Length: 199
Picture (spheres, rainbow, N blue to C red):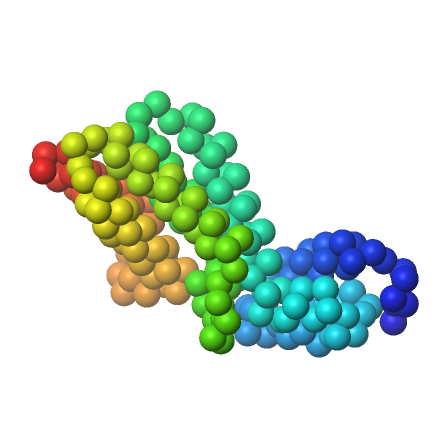
């Protein structure tokens, strides 16, 4: 077992969050526990609670890292987009592809329960930033739309892409032939955006 002075608080934080990622490469978050995580880095559970505040907040920090990685990929891909429509598809594809590559990390983002604790500002800000990117693109496609319409449509698109992603991960399309998630997303966006432009 590591001694208290073997690592700084920041080093222990980094080791813990790295080990969450490593664990989720092959296991679901339901199989992870504070005790398992502490043991994997050679510390006792109370050390991690002292550093992160709670196991809930530790997992929330891991979720924040996942969202940061996803947004980093989104921004890199957006640089290649030439139109707002391309940008919208790029974001949707990035979301879908990230979930396919990191299914357990992606599922933790949406299955984590704060158990009555308030969502910290630093996490709420991340979510708002993701939504604002989507809203800005929709506004660029049809500048005449009111902010309330833009907000609502951004959630419709996100919820739809999320549904396609979730059903794909769980293999619940109930189809005798393979379903291409990108094709479903393209179909969804082209139909939705055609209406968005005209109305």
